[in-house]
Amino acid sequence: MSKLNSNDIAHLAGVSRSTVSRVINGYANVPEETRERVMKVIHENHYYPLISGRLLSGKSTKTLGLFWIGQPQLASDSLVSNYFMHIIDAAAQRGYLVLSSVIDNLTDKANVNHVRRIFMEGRIDAGIFVGENNNEPLVEELSSLGMTLGLFDYYHENEDVPGRITVNFERDSGEKAIDYLYSLGHRRIALIDGDFSRISCVHRHESYMRGFMKHNLPVQNKWIAAGGIVSQGGYEAAKRMLSACMDDLPTAICANNDAAAFGVYKACRELGLSIPGQISIIGHDGHERGLFTEPPLTTLAFDFRAMFASLVDRVVDTLEKKENVPQSVFLPSTLVERASCRRIDA
Image 1 (cartoon, rainbow, N blue to C red):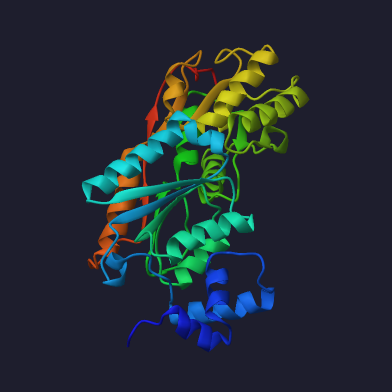
Image 2: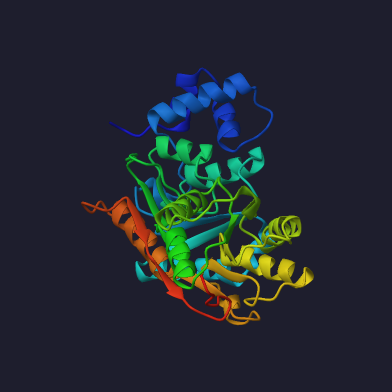
């Protein structure tokens, strides 16, 4: 069956070719009913416009799109910038270029249209997403169009969608943190939870709870606070929580990630609490900044180079029609012991 062109789409949708073009390019001057009708025809026929003679001849662009979803200033963070380098390096190893976009959110229609247009114009063979929510409508839309997607920190239980490739943090790092603190004698453990729109934060909280249950530790609501995944959120959550229980402090805090842990450090300093003398702190990620905090941060570290190499390799294997490509991979953490946690008498 021959591939449809924009004239065919226009005929099937009962609109002009220029209207199809305006819909594809995200212009606002199209009635919503018309836009939906055109998009329905596009979805049903797996149509996307090609942008060059190379593509018209059916050849690959040998290019992956990299979409960082989050505050632009965070893209310069050393951990996030390493994400970019690992992805670019892994793609280069497979002979692919990377087209990068930094997008503050996927709730704004202009941003969604920007990403959609890159895919639908055939500028890339597949897209790598970092920072998207775990229930992202654009991911569902692109999947329904048969696009190949590589998704970091994205997982739906018992869901097998062709072309949707994911890499994730292990599910048990929270339990590992509790195990470690318990081995040091800690029985009064607080949590700074992350952003529950991200599957890793959900899994981490669930594994904290498994650790509490395994060791028969009390779960006290006053020692659990939502801090998100950035330093400011960790600071605000820890400051609020610790200020409210200065007469009944935990002996240790598990931070959802290292960035939040750095915020916990700041809160402890402002409240005059010594680390680890009064409060032990453990994070997750293995952020290089943790080497230089005072004291250096104990963390559950992840091999991000291996994570993104796994993601890119499986995306490329999918593009190249290889068989038995694992759709979802969870990579383990390694405990890095530093001076932010101390042994106490149980």
